[in-house]
Length: 50
Image: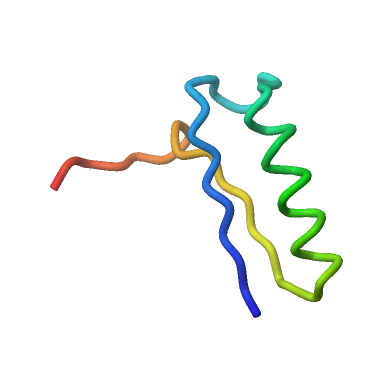
């Protein structure tokens, strides 16, 4: 199983955020259950409106 955790904080990497801490808990649990987990920060990506 693969899982993508999208962190929607407004703070760019590597600034710490509360959302990052919560996403880490979720990612850790998913990994413990055998998932291949990737975490990305939406603010670090160039996402264009549709």
